[in-house]
Length: 297
Ligand code: GLU
Figure 1 (cartoon, rainbow, N blue to C red):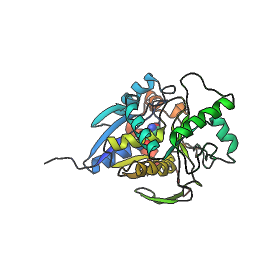
Figure 2: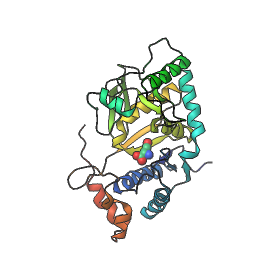
Figure 3: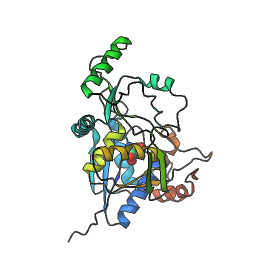
């Protein structure tokens, strides 16, 4: 008999900086939940953004996690080695009519969007390149490319178009979060058509994360509350690919003394810096538990 339950959790850091207390506490929660369920924990390094991820951060992550007391059963797996899987998923989404090409730059989208809905979130796409209902993917690609030429914004060699997910406007979505309770959002209002594949030929986080969580058989996703809205985008991808969705547990964020959430640029709160100051993992964990952000919702 298998001594492990079916529970499979994961921790998924991005090596774009050193881990800070906020990441560490979320991972700690993930570990506690995996252990309580007698399940497995998988380490996945989310390094799709090749330009922003650095190998020194990648190495530091594993060392910092071990020091903090996090142990994983499988991995590390690296997203940069899994692009073929993401590409296959994009092809499926294209064939099923869920993805369309878009030649807008970030600037175009920002200029056309009245107000980004939420701090740090992808702004709501105004639909400039969104095809009307009767369209073929091939015709849409060629139209999108023509538009690039017409606008004299032919991107450098090798650059093509963004691929966006077409969200079902007006659909009320809901899921029950294991930490936060019922969550609701309206597609097209709380979030818009989002990027699946970037014009610089990199898969977007939303696509890579769903493909990997499905491929790795993850049953429960434990991550920070800042990714709450992303969950709705990801649920649409699960549905479009006909993959069973996992459970979600969005852990409260850690805030600094001024009540602001921590960011990777706050070097003083990195595990490295705290360790250098002589703190032990226990001395970090206890006060960190007390400074989790109050929830505005
Ligand atoms: N890689 C993401 C981050 O470091 C986390 C993604 C996730 O847990 O879904 O913020």
